Image (cartoon, helix red, strand yellow):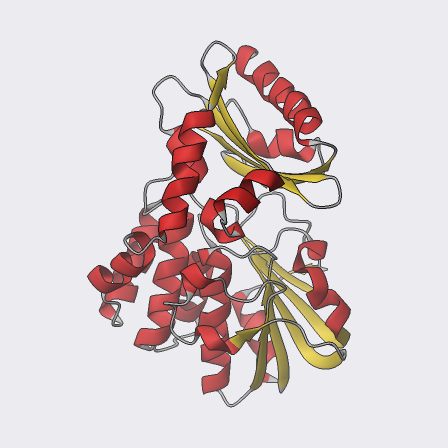
Length: 326
């Protein structure tokens, strides 16, 4: 593994013909927008590019230009000159993509998670960037790439969704500089924002209503949490992508320092999403204790155990950090 420069990454891609671009399972807007932007750019260079994601493109992201380019991995493994992993902090979070790569001449890892393991032959990890989409904006600027409206729209969606509409603490001057250049390249902000934030399915409202009714507050009111069982998922008829952003409603409550969302998964696992409003409560470090990772103020993990068991252990760890703030 080497710490790559933009020039080294561009050179590696220039000499390749068969390229795979992939991102983490249960993809969010940053993963999908970054994948599509990079895929569209590489195709404009005449490369043969495949874009895979274990879960494909969920319905709530089908407004992204070129979304049909991302497919689920093929059953017969294929060989690629280069595999590009985007927004993926841990290699195994590529999921079934790994099983469908017969061989890769080179693995490139571009990401912004502080917990990234720097897997790959060339890695560009920038935890100061609030989104992988911002890194790609800077990559394209560095390489003198003229952005099309389609590429710019995907990057704007990537940055906007991963910064909470430019609200989260990682948002910096570089973020707004990137956004300005993307708008200048042809992003229709009003139209895109409507698709991102004002076109929610009604079942998501049902889930939000349930979450707010069942929310728990502990640790002297500083810790908010919500658990979603498989039985409730079946009852409400919600889809995995409907969970996106639910935790932010708990985090927004006055006095809450940290919010945690527990989602029961099949085969005795629980998906945990954690948020913090106080840098002294590092949820990335807490999730790391359970095999997960992410960012200091936004992280996650998948933990073996029942919903009740995982909830008790994880909330105990978070409350310990809240009470021991200096």
